[in-house]
Structure formats: structure tokens, C-alpha cells
Image (cartoon, rainbow, N blue to C red):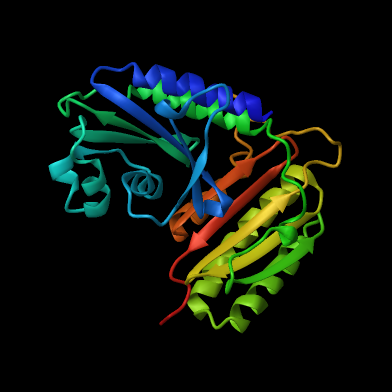
Length: 294
């Protein structure tokens, strides 16, 4: 339920903002095939958690941490050369800098947390154990979220974006169907042959995982927007109706690890990748940018 995810976020923010030298904590979760972050903060909490969206391509520290999967810390003076507009908005207040950590489960970046500090010398503003626990709890909460209404083909896209959708069966031959579909569409959009080959290879891994885990049909979407290619595969859960992939707190529980060796390849070849769980199944996506040889 959405209430569960909100409760996890609220509890995690309360724990982190109580840290020494911390004045405010923000939490961001990857959404929309990696194109946006769902954001809330410790000073935006009420009876209902107040979420908003951040464009994943904005030049802010949270996006940098999500993209790199690495910790980022510094005073405003240290961060200003890299994030001039962001830092300019922070100056004049009581804070002196920030520390940001990625939220990582089974090697996948779910989002990030950022602590605004009034004492940049504080090294333990975001305790590793607390951040790791928050990441695992958020991943488990995602698996209980209601499935978004409608198919991938029903989701709106930005004006001017190119989009192509296909449904494939829950059988091994679905991999070939998906590969041919994506290769044909990307070639029609004028995408570089090398990038097409990479996209098709990564798509094969995602569709194979969907077939192995569910045995049910899947949806495939290719989206080209502002020079960025995103490919998504959304499974429909298992034929039995049981959800075999609900994450637990052990190393072998993640649905993308059971037959997920190929996802190491996806991680290596793409700009970034991720997945969005719900109570029925999983949507896995990857991004390639730039997708043309221009």
C-alpha cells in the first residue's frame, strides 16, 4: 500500500534528521523509467507525506548521486564549481554544506538521501546502517504498491517524443519477437547501429528475466525523448497469481538476481538502469544516451 511506503519514508527521515549537525534531510526515489525523482523532505511532513517530482536531468547533487551510485559531500564553496545554480540558492541560510548517499539494494540505485548540515565537519550525518535499512525497507514497500492503471501504451509521453510499444508472450520465443521489434523501431528513428546493438542485447536480458520469472506476457516500450533512449519491459506477474519476486532481506531474494547474471551486462553497457516493483510484478528499464552517432 502507498501508506506503507509513506510510513517508511517518514520514519527514515525522522531518524536521519536527528543526526548531529543535520538541519534537514531530503529523500528521492527513481520513477518514470529513470526520467524523474519522487522527492520529499523532513520539513515537508504532515499527516500525509508531501511528495513532488524532480527532473532527473536537473543539475543538482541528488541527481549526481543517483547517476553515479556514489556518496557526495562538501561545503557550499566546494560544491559551487560543480553545482553553481543549486549552491547559489542555498547560500544565505544557516546551512554550510551537505552530504548525500545513494539508496542501494542488491547493487541497484533506488534513489538517494541528502542531509543539509550546519557543521560541514560532521562525518556521520548519514549513518551507513540507517541508510541501508531505509533502502531495504523502501524496496520492500515498493513490492506492496498497487499496480499502475493501464498499460505502458496508455502512459502519456512528452510532446515531440518518439514512442513504440509491443506486447510479447510469456514464452522463450518472446525474446526474438522483442529484439526484432526494437531493432526495427530504432533503425526507423535513425539511431546509430552500435547503439541499436547495445539496446537489443540489453533488451534480451530483460525479456528473458520476465519470461523466467513469470511465464506471463510482457509489455515492451522504446522511448526517444530529447536525445535520450529509454527501453522498458513490464511483466504482468506470474500465471499462478502469486508474486514470486517479493524482496526479502537476504542476498539471494531480489527478483533480478535469480537469473540476473545478464543484468551485470546491462549495468555495464547502459547509462543507468533500474526497476519499479508493485504488488503484481516488475517494470525494468535502461537508458542509453546519446542514442545517435551525431
